[in-house]
Length: 200
Image (tube, rainbow, N blue to C red; front, side, top):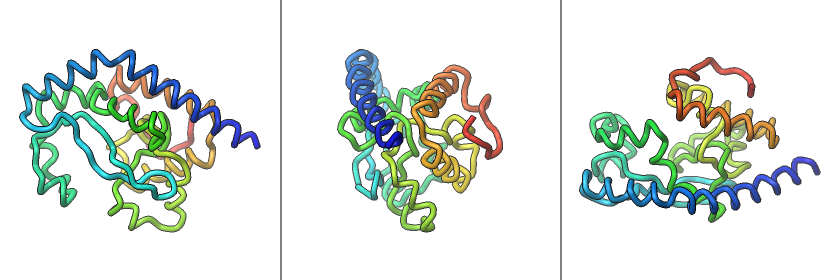
C-alpha cells in the first residue's frame, strides 16, 4: 500500500515538475533549438523508438548533438558517435541540455523524472527474465546508474543499478538521485565514478 501511494505521488510530481519545468525553461529550449538549426543543418530533435514500462514503445525526444548519419542511427552503430558529436553538441551533453526535451515524454506519461534509462528494443530482446524487471517502472530522465558512473559503467552494471532502484524504490531515494543529478551536472560525471554499490 505504501509503495502504491508513493508511486501515485511520484506521478503527480512528474506531471507538475515537467509541466512547470517546460514553462520555466522554454526560453532555453528555444535558444538551443535555434542554435542547433544554425550550427548543425538538419532536424533540431533526435527521435528514436525506445521501450518503456511494460514493454510499451514510445519515441524519445532529445536535442540533436550529432551530425546526421541515417545509417548509423538505423543500425545502432555507436562506434561512429565520437566523430559525429559536434562541439556545440558536446557542450549541451555536458550540461545535460540535450535531455531536456524529454520533459515532454514525462508529461505525456511515457517517462518519469527519475527511473531506469529507456533503451532500444534490440537490447531489451537480449534481457534475461530477471533483467526484464527493469521495465516494471517508467523509464527516467535520470536514474541511479546515471549518478554512479553512467557511461563509465558496464552495460550489465547499469542494469543492476536499475534493478536495485526498482527493488528499493522510495520517494527519499528519488530525492537523493535528484540532488546527485544536479551535482553531476555542476561537477561532471567523473566526480561520481564508482564501483557497483548500494543506493547511498
